[in-house]
Length: 589
Ligand code: MV4
Image (cartoon, rainbow, N blue to C red; front, side, top):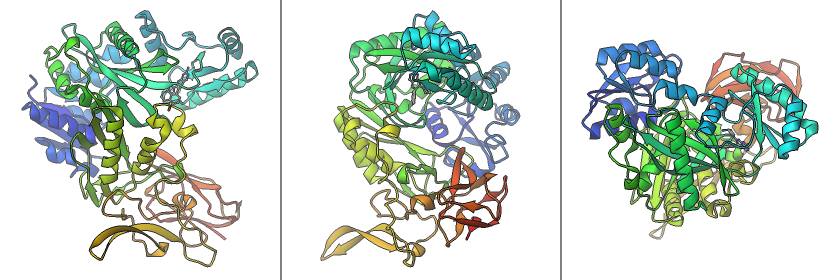
């Protein structure tokens, strides 16, 4: 077995791996940036080393410093987690060259699966089809027209080196083909430095189903089970579950066998996930993720298999501790990603800050994989995942009921979270019926009423009021009551809300949450971050809702809008400025 494991990551996934090491009696080594000096993963690890720096690039992506720490600590293995270096062939090679085990697949497998076209070619060579389309790069729009006329409209133009939907265009007719291709190529060139594109049939209402596999170095490759990840917003997964609803077992068996064939075709070793689109009873290869995924606990909860422990075994050169026939899936599991984002009005604005109090739910079948405790800071410099709530039930209805109970029990103050939106998703009849798809959250789900309760509209001369909930006792009986208090009486970033749930923080109107509130005429920063663009100058006329500047926080760009029509009288920021919550960015008269 391994003698000492360095975790080249942070947050909940670092905590997850450190726990697996502790249970196997393997000493763990944490690394931390200046902002993570007191973080939970540092507190739990056996040893911890400073990376220096604050941003990801300065710290967790600092290859040289990580290699130094491997040397200093004497670690004989490195777990990359997800994100950061988890799918970086150079990093994997640099580790292996030092005789240190990379707890993941061989670099060659990462490389093959690293771009959409080569992964699709590899899958098709293994007999696993992608959505009907081309694997030759497009030369002109006429080729799109020819494909659409032969295979039917609409078609999807995709960037070969794209990801997360960027560089993807849906083309409904021949007339749109040339402009769509030019647009896709332009976005791909800007976003990825490569403009190669290909075309395939477009699936209008697909589900996103992924198959977990794990392979050892002794020729064993097992499919462990599928996860349905269709509840997504802008390609960010919100809710994952297993088994997939309305998913026949014969399709499951076929998809499992297909995933194993794809893994074997690229010489895969360790844990990986093969992604498919599923529509009208057919599934199509989409891509392969050559890392442990955020949502791996969903599979662990229905199989009882500790995937991280199996990863450590495989990296130590041992065989898997189970065979395909040993895998039994029982019941149903649902995972909710709890992000530091305010879903008010469907905006999902980043909400970094200090978690003044966090009390995750407990009880039967309730798991919390979190990266933070009360008093910890969710920084704008890293992704905003606070943790994952995973609930198990004997069937899907029971799993959903338990997840809703747990979400309502969850207490977190100091930051806004996606919990109100998660509750809205789980309560929605479409989701309960399993009739959602990858487009459902953005096209069908109405989130206008979730998150911060709507602020009471007021006349110009009244003070804006915000909804709060408070627990009171009347004649010996306890009640949760709603109050509407003047907005200027609300404290700073306090989470607030009832003691019983992650109730919304003090509300801000939708425009306010885009930074337009504050003293009349002042456009303020809704959160800490960095100004990336200023769109106005003194003397310019602006209209309500017009973006006066762009604020970057937690890897997301946010337009900061004018709250009313008027003339710009002051611009207090410039690109590159760091700003804090409430800073006046622009004033408008
Ligand atoms: C598609 C598709 C429909 N038809 N391809 C989006 C990002 C990339 N991973 C692939 N994606 C899609 N490709 C065809 N031919 C719909 C999507 C899609 C999607 C896929 C998986 C998960 C979430 C998604 C959200 C929107 C669109």
